[in-house]
Each structure stands twice: as structure tokens, then as C-alpha cells.
Image (cartoon, rainbow, N blue to C red; front, side):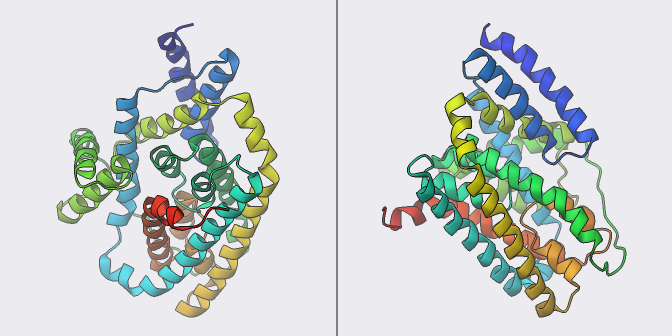
Amino acid sequence: MKQWQRWMIVAPASVALGLALSRFNVPAAWILAAIIISGISALGTGRELHVNKQFYAFCRGIIGVLAAVPLAGVPPRELLHYLVPGLVSAAVIVGIGFFGGLALAGYSRGRVSRETGVLSMLSGGASIMPALASELGADMRYVALTQYLRLLAVSMTLPLVASLLVTPGAGHSAGASGQWWMWLLIPAISVVGNRLGSWVRLPAASVFGPLILTAVLAAVLPVPIVPPEPLAVMAFMSVGWICGGGLDVPGLKRFAQLLPATIAFIVVVMASCAATGWVVARWLGITYFEGYLATSPGALETVLALSSEGGGPAVVSLQLIRLICILVFAAALPKILRRLPRR
């Protein structure tokens, strides 16, 4: 069967499964659906399912836009007020991910590179990490599988844990409906941001170029930037197709062999974040409910949904400060690792 014939099956099947998973509120439903369907195709035929390079570069730009949108919704003064506790909590989470990733790479005895280990263990930005992995020379498939496993664990436990904590009071969630011209603006940001990022030699230019351009435009435009949902779905599925389409039996075996260590790390991260949340709550004089949500290791959509029911500005502000720190750290990761001695 030719590539285009496989895509005639994989694309609609991915959409159908994504709709089904979304209906049941499965975390990262579109990425997971694309991984499953393209993975079945790759494993069933024994041949990799290729994704067009230009299409994937465009989709990485859309992911960069999506990563920047939450940053534009918080006033700079609010971020500054929570800057110090946000940086401290971010340093704890990033430090755990960095050293945990190095430990995983050492434990794997060469089966996982240091770049792959660290990107797999950084908590936050799960949808953007595989895109960064493909540009930073890491194993994108392993990063995606590990990040999704952490996202699934956090998303499933967050509502349960939050229900056991004292809620400070109902909040209000604000929504915005996209304009028709967003169908023109978002693709333009993806393309132009990619070129600008390459021109100034940004790391992972196809992601960080559109991300920075979106943040700049959001500061000057009189209306919020709201990417149309079909574009976001397409971008998420492109990540899943890249990951699943390249799956093979040896790669799955490697992931399975390291699964106990990965699960142990996820438990350590969640416990560390819970402890950090208690410290942040005491520091800022907020409830532990807010502190726990503010330091949750990822699952930002679930965190914001729970926060709208009883969280304050600290939750959004600390989560976004950490997201910025993680993105900056991930971009600088190759330089950091080059300075470390290899064992």
C-alpha cells in the first residue's frame, strides 16, 4: 500500500478516534488518537508513516502560537507580583526534571540520550515537548510517550485530589470566540514567525519564532488571539502522527523496559510538587487548594478548569511563570548539556 493510500485511512480514522476520546474527556485526546492510529499503521505494515516536512513545520508553528496564548491573558503586573515564588517553584520543578532526566539516561545505559531523558522528564508543555525534541536531536517518540504518561497520571488525579481540599470560593472563567480573520492570522504567524526565528537563529525556530511573535502581537492587538479549534486539532494530530508513524517494535520494547523507572519518577514529581504547593500556599497566604493547583506538574487545561471553580490569580500566574521557565530552559538545553562532562 502506498503512502497516500495509508493516509486516506489514517487521517479520517485519527479524527474519528480523537472525537471519541474527546467526548470522554481523555487528556491530550487528539495527540493520543493520532499516535494510536498511525502507530497501528506503522507496526501493522512494518513501514514508517511519513509526514510532510513543510506541513509539520507549519503545525509546529501553530503549537508555538497555542503555547503563547495563555501568556497573553495575564497582565504583566500580576506576573510580577508572583514572580519570586513562581521562579522558586519553577526552579524546583525544572531541577527535578533535569536531574531526573540525566538519571534516566544513565540508568538506560545508552538507550536514551541525555536530551531525550531531560525533555521526557520536564513537567509542563507536554504538547510542545515532542516538537522541541524533533529539533533538538532527541527521540521524539520516547519523549511523547513519556510526557503523555505523566499528563494522563496528573489529569486523572487532579480532580480527585482537588475535591478533597478546601475550595476558597467560586471564580469566573472568561471565554472568547474566534474571529474569521484568525484563519488568516494564525497561519501567517506560523509562517512568518518561523522565518523570523530562523533569521535571528532562535533555538527550535519553528516553535519559538511563532511563540514570541504571538506574544508581541497579543500585546498590541485590541482583541485576544484565539486560534480556530480545527487548526489546533490539526497541529496536535501532526505531533501524534510523527510519534506513532515512526513506532517500531524495538522502540516500544525500549520504552517498556524503562517504564518502571519512568513511573517512579512521575510519582516523585507529583509528590515534590504537592510539597512545593504547601510551601507556596504558606508563602503567599493562599489556600492549599490554590497552592496545589499552582504547582501541579502539567495538565494546564485541567488546572485552569479547576481554578475557575475556586482558584485565584496565583494559580494562573505561577503556572505561566513555570511554563515560560520550562520553555526557556528547554531551548537552552543543548548548550547546558554540552558544558556537562559525559560519563
